[in-house]
Image (tube, rainbow, N blue to C red; front, side):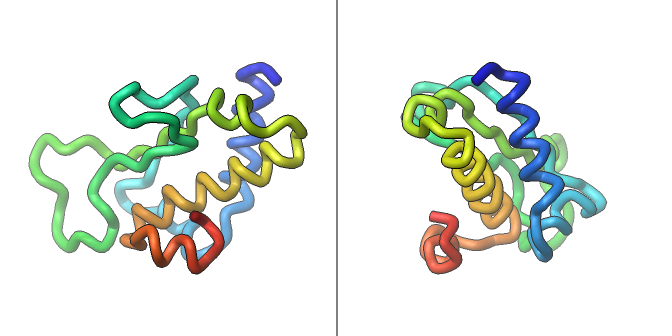
Length: 116
């Protein structure tokens, strides 16, 4: 699978995100999503990473703070999952996991919802 095909899968996942997760794309400061090859080495092998201030942090982000961003890492998924169906499933789980962080959910709460 090449990058454009993987990006298409990520776009499909974004278009099918259920509420309340979908609201993260409609906030006054919407979450951005990018596809990157791999996480920076300091993070180890990740499928995704949320960077930003969770929507549950009341008030405005600190001055100079970047908008919230989700990075989806392509090669860790392609290294583990072989079929397009498996990759689609993992992209969806990863996107919902990272959106969950934006909504203030912790790892335990995400695991309970099947997004661990």
